Length: 304
Image (cartoon, rainbow, N blue to C red; front, side, top):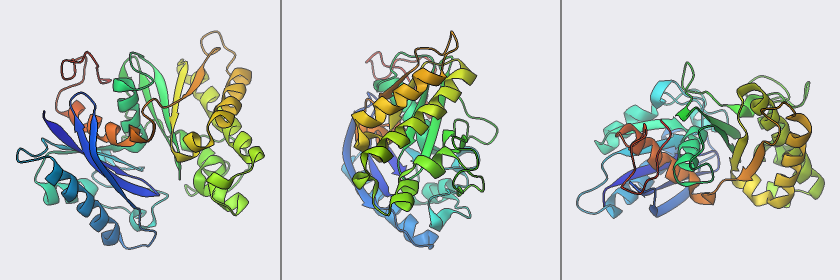
């Protein structure tokens, strides 16, 4: 069965694996994201992981490489400049370097947009024409599907819900603003506020984080006429039920228009596999297995 090489680049870890045309993940592996400022140190981790995964694909090899990377980025990942990754914050030519390394077609998306593709393909938003996908992890990102289409925006960064303001005049954000969701509810923000990693956060911090995520979701639902938010990421999934209960309560209180009332906040259906399945979906979609085409005979479809 043909496979695509999938690469997920995050603020905490880099992961690689193989994704079939039915959305099945295999041969996944990961390494910590280097915390230093050397761009080549981070790319060496990327190169090691994709080389290992490529070998696992067998003699036929992968047909393409799909990437989900923390953003923002310029169109199609020609340059990525992630706020939460010091090594590449000033800009890194990711797609060009991967093309040189792999000699394969390479397709790059913002990680949360890749997650939106995965969740709409084989996850919790399967069959839905409109939803928000969110990653609440080291940072906070988002991807939007409306009328069955993944939104891109002028530079490819549509859906960056991490920079919706949820606390006016709040904490400084790496983007230069204040009170952004990322500055108040990300893993980095929680560690800075509590002096502890998010997994050790007290119940009141878990509830506050869920409330702020719900506040952002309500704003998006009211603005864009959608009624589902699918949330992934180590912080959200690690906090679990109390986080999702707080988020849902805030959405119920603030999304009150006839079309937004009843908006649901649910855990991502693919769990920790979502980012890599999403990266694979980026490649499969670019190869033509979207736009309503049945994927691998399974009846599952990628958002257009």
